[in-house]
Image (cartoon, rainbow over all chains, first blue to last red; front, side):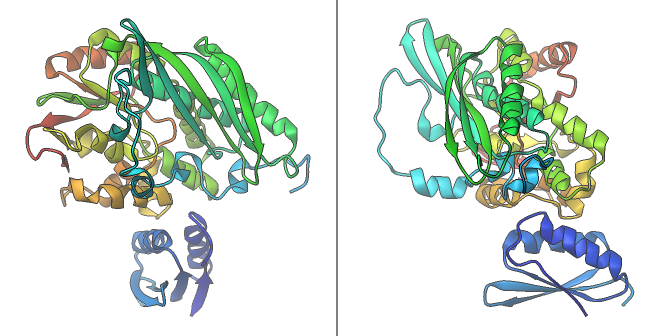
Amino acid sequence: MVEVDVRGFSCPIPVVRTKKAMEQNPNEVIAVLVEVEVSRENVLRLAESQGYSVETEEVSGEYRLILTPPGK
Amino acid sequence: MKKGDKVRLTETVSGSGCACKIGPGDLSKALGGLSLLSDPNLITKLERAEDAGVYKLTDDLAIVQTVDFFTPVVDDPYAFGQIAAANALSDVYAMGGKPLTAMNIVCFPVKAMDISVLREIIAGGLDKMREVGVVLVGGHSVEDKELKYGLSVTGVIHPERVVQNTGAVVGDKLILTKPLGLGIINTAVKSNMVDGETAARAITIMATLNKTASEVMLEVGVHAATDVTGFGLLGHGGEMVSDTEVGMVIHSWAVPYLPQAKGFAEMGLLPGGLYRNRDFRAPMVEVDEAVPRYLADIFFDPQTSGGLLISVAAGKAPELLSRLRGKGVSEAAVIGEIVSQPKGKIIVK
């Protein structure tokens, strides 16, 4: 699983880095670590727009988003 | 960053433009309940979150005062100066006033950034002031880690002709004079995803003064107006109807926005201020489920130097619209109306 840690970064960096990870690993499941609600929502929108399904785990105030590419 | 390097201004700051405003929820917490001096000559009420303060000096003369400054929204210093000045002047225009004088407000990282950058910013601001005959009378500068620029503006107005943000009447049409999506485009610019043409168009829109729109609005006669800036269309629209006897309906299909904002919104390139605006207004805004999410996002998008939102009698709306378009405010559109129920709320259809 590819992991993207964008804790501590404000918009638009979490989306930019996640998008880059998607482009470099087109068929891989990607885990994204974010700490703020804004980043969570933005990465969620990105994932949905690219057809990924999303599972969210909340761990001590931070979020771990598991993005699964279409057809996997 | 070394002195002499070509600086990308937006990369030097964490928040951008009006999106770096302290959110309305936090502001309420800071200001709510504090006792303020009352004065019969103060025409605007601070608690109504007006665009500018208006203070009556004589029966036919009042002064209009406002201040606005922010971090860079664009990379080019000259364009940033123009945009910041247009944005600050806009608050006077939103009240129907005529700006006369301005003072520069500067926060600048003197040690980290070449002073020529500041010179270009101020030149951009001065050119906007020159365009409308506003005189620079002074200013104040502070050394700061993050660059900020803006103006304090003083203007005049007839006390009987102040256009406040309340006063909308049931049946009024709502006219918006600039397209939305500027905050989203600015966020996308920060991520290097915007083509040159779109970025240039956004700069042109932000640097355009609301002077013509304001003058036409005064000629035709309107009930209320505000400028759409950091709190977005629904945030500032909310100021027009909250705690009043009227409500607002926005026709989502009629609202002009930069077409590229759709794709960027769907991709999640949304400024943090957009979510703060949405959360603050959630109790008074009802978005029909048929309205696509990207449009609702655009309606909460913090605008930098956005257009005027004008509430005008339905019978005068066609005249106002055609005069605006005839004078170059070409993207003005009727985007909704004022209704009797539900009062104090905004319905987005």
